Amino acid sequence: MPEHDESPEQSGVEPPRRGPERDERTGRSAAAARIAHQATWVDQQIRLAMERGDFDDLPGAGKPIEDLGVEHDPDWWVKKLVEREQIALLPPALAIRKEDAELDGRLDRINVESEVRREVEEFNAHVRRALYTPPVGPSGPPVITRQRDVDAEVESWRERRTARIEAQRAARAAAPPEPTKRRWWRRR
Image (tube, rainbow, N blue to C red; front, top):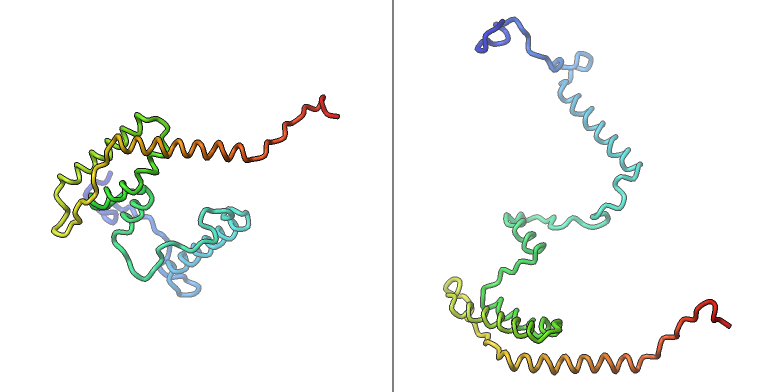
């Protein structure tokens, strides 16, 4: 039994061979022939899969490949993550401005007054936090967004909600009534 530190030549056991280095018939490299054979096999498998329809209706079919440009951006994966997960990477002052612009729309989707109060109080807490947070970098934008008066916002929400409900009622009243369906046994 050979010891572990003996080489295969010393032990009398030959290592497994992968084949001749050169093709005896053509004189070309045997490795090149194996690679060429493998490439034709892969092409054949792709062709068969296309004939079976395995590549039909794939999600990206017929669309150009995204971000296939000349420049290479090392942060491409971060940008894709931010876009896919919709992560906000704004300085606090700009994030507060954006939140302020979207607040009325968010409030209009709420149906309960207590939730409206909570939402406005939460917005005011974000404004206070941004006011007391030092700006990012030497040229960070200042926070110019003001806190909102909770009672005034609730009152304006009530007015908008009442106007919206009245408009919906008027639209329903102006619309022609839908004909009632008669049951098959009452048809004449």
